[in-house]
Amino acid sequence: MGGNDGNIYALNAQTGPKLWSLTTTDTVYTSPAVANGVVYVTSATRNDTSFMSDGKLDALNAQSGAKLWNYTTKSAVFSSPAVANGVVYVGSDDGKLYAIGNRTTTLTLAASTTTPAVNQRVTFTITLKSGTTPLSSKPVTIYHYLNGVRYTDTNKTTNINGQITFIQSFGSAGQRTYYATFAGDSSYKASTSAVVTIRVH
Image 1: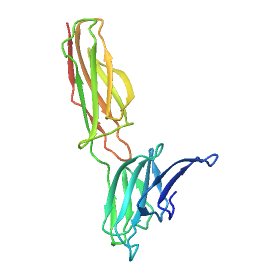
Image 2: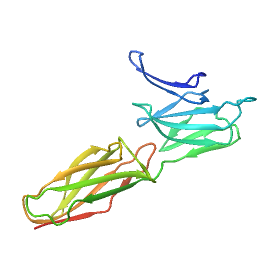
Image 3: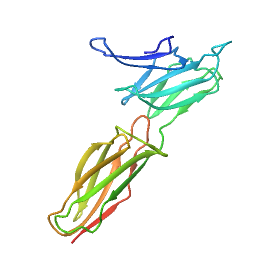
């Protein structure tokens, strides 16, 4: 919930204690929307003569309150956001309805070597970004194919640098193809890495 004190509060829905709060430089007039672990809240920038200044839409991590991204309109936003099919809708006092879609992502997969010997350890590094911004706390799945059969290697969450690392060794020679996927969420689009071919000798 938001308050005229410029704070956004997250409370435990069962027992009521405050989980986190975020202080903004703006005034929050609306109720937030929550979808897929993201809190969307709109606000208006206060100035000396009027509240009818720039408006903002902030996307926050529902667990921590950390700001994920924001969007600024040309006038105050007094409508609560609505979320549907990965798009956030807000109305602004500039007379426009804004539809803000998921941001694109890139997922890269790298291996410390692509020609390991049997039982040699290979370190895989996966990096998830939106533009140049690393995306943390996002679930990524790593797969590989061997002899035409797909196997799931691991499901992990990206760290503060938007990365995952895992180490693998191989008990037999042969060719394996690896790739990683991010399924997307209410803020970011899905992406799949390029294939990395591992030839074990």
